[in-house]
Amino acid sequence: MNGAEMSNCPYRERRTLFEDLLTDHGLTAPWTLCPMTTDLAKAREWLESWTHVSGVEGIVPKVWC
Image (cartoon, rainbow, N blue to C red; front, side, top):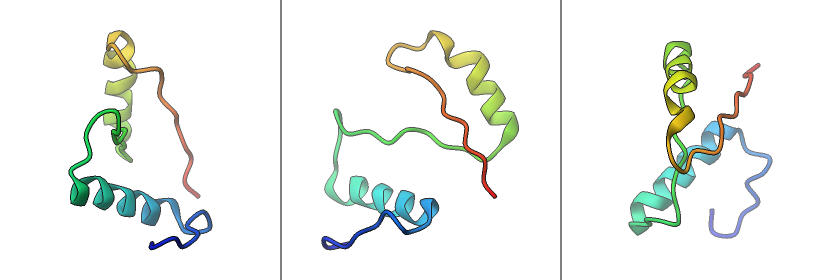
């Protein structure tokens, strides 16, 4: 990274870099990494069970082409 523009990089690459950044620097709240899954069953579980979790504002589905 080191100041490099990352917006044109694939999401998965940016996500990995962000995960590493949080881990490497021991960042905690208010910095947090939202959970992510490509597993449809897990996404359905989240839709059904996370509707009453404090601090969860919603779920953002994304379609990968």
